[in-house]
Image (tube, rainbow, N blue to C red; front, side, top):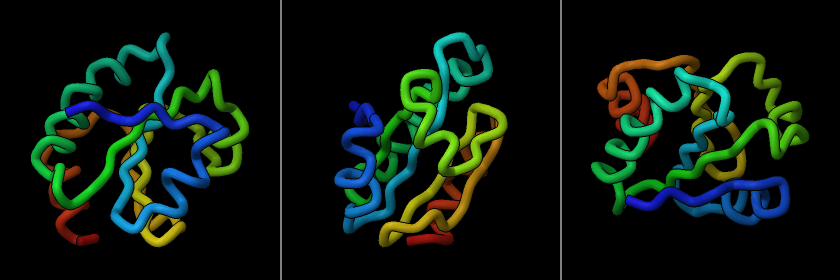
Length: 106
């Protein structure tokens, strides 16, 4: 599944105005745990492709969004519903953690 690249310029339109649950993976290229988490997020996105949207936001390239959501450590996966953050999971976690979180929000 192709995730969407989220940036400062499309964040409001794509994430906050989305009519479905939006999962945003906050990451950076230098972050090894971020690279470890990436395939897990891709799998989750594929499992829920008809129910959610998935995007990745590079914190180095979009520091304003990272600051707005007080991202202190990455990887950080934030869940947005109806324009508001409704949950977040920090660090590399098993796929079931993400699936369970999504199930509770759908």
